[in-house]
Length: 269
Image 1: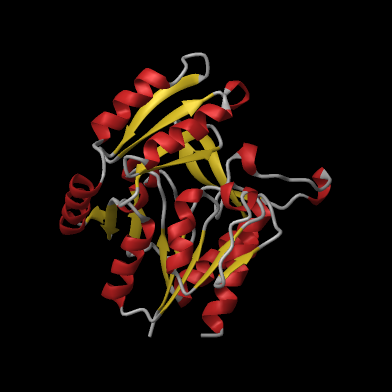
Image 2: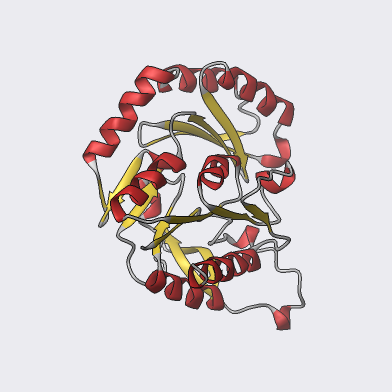
């Protein structure tokens, strides 16, 4: 039976220049491979060693990139290894099959959102009204499913984020602060539901997962085994579970370590 590996991307397997966390002397820094270009500029990286490990993983398991990115943002990424048959985008709102969103899956998701939580319009209106223009740089809606703000982190009032989280909780939404972005995401919109659907379609009897943020918690809890790096929201809050391994590694080297852990688990299955 195949092993399914569902992994978050940003700050789990791939890293912006600001998130690399290269603490060693320059001469000992790992060689990096650019895996994303945006507006003709390099944007995301992994180590060359991680790139080789990901290629090996793609040959040995059903690798499913699993991201909160929109489909358009995901398609900027050029990962090494075999092209994944499945990818999870928009936090589970879109299940891509050979690069195309599955319409039946998307219809199921949007029906659940309509039934179980406040509307995107209500949340978007609150963000527009309540967020301070002093630290907000952009208001964005992602694939008509959820909203996020791009902020100046050093100016951000983090108490405001906590207040937003309480407001959202009462309406069936979750708030996550990741780098310069504050996400507001409906609770029924989950990576774990999409992962279970891929497992059903592929017949996988073992699921592995990794992620660093609050929006990855449900994915890690749903998988048979999970890993998180030593950075990010989950590390900051000490998130743990019986099936989860908290790694000490931080930055781009954590991505390399996670891929080694995946491969070890696949080989031992």
